[in-house]
Amino acid sequence: MNLHIIKKKGIVLMFAIAAIVNFTSCQPEDSFTNNGLTPTTVDASFKVTPVEGKTNVYNIVAQPKGVLRSIWDTGSGFADGKMNFEISLPDAGTYTISHKAIGAGGATALATQNIIVATSDPVKGNILKGGRLTNSEDWSKWTVTNPASSASITFGSGSATLTATGWAGNGIYQAINVVAGKKYVIDMLTSSTTGGSNTWFEVYCGYAAPVTGTDYSEGGKLRALSTWDGCATAAFSGKISAVGCKAENNLGIFTATKTGTAYLVIRGGGEDMKAGIKIQDIEMRLSM
Image 1: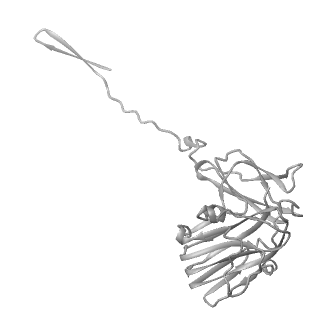
Image 2: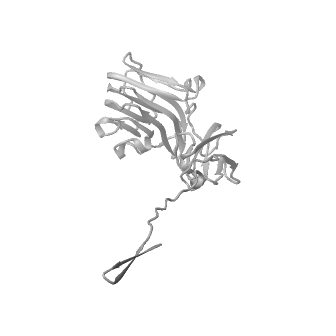
């Protein structure tokens, strides 16, 4: 501080003049390290362990250190999940489990593991053959019904896509063995990149064999997508049990009235199905 004295008419005036100093806070470039904002590496590894006492059930545990968000793909696409959960895989086959871990600053890592299931669960197993539509062996388990020049079923790796124009329609079916008094739950993954125009997609199950040239309607609709009922008008993806519309047409349960051969029929069509409806992971299981 500087002290100034000024004399004026016998009066001494004293002024204290303080120097004004601007302080600028400086921090090193690494001062924000590990504050949750700076990207760091993240570990997406996880362990898979069979659950004792449960058939084809596995415990999946991801290492938690540095993971802020955990996203899993257990067969139906990536979705937010927990770090520790159980998964039931009742059908024999090889399953790829993928874990995307997100850490500080948006850092990501991906880890995958295969789970090999040697034998199907005799109670919970899929009674359909080739329901995963993996390859030609699976495709051969299905019969195409009502083939038409303006409607088609195209099989691909793990899927079948139904397309149609001009109000045509067709589908696929499979003969199955059912037991009187038992209830069976039917579901599948369905998707479309476009939705359709005046389009239907329906699932039936009955004791009469499908006849070429005739629309199958035995047993009533068990699952359905319909633009008239407000779904499948735009792009969609999910289990038909979730994305289907009109609840009374989407219960998905077949009750066997007699023991013997029944037929699961999946069919659809319309004025313009555009990119079509893709079918994956078709399943029919005993209701627990």
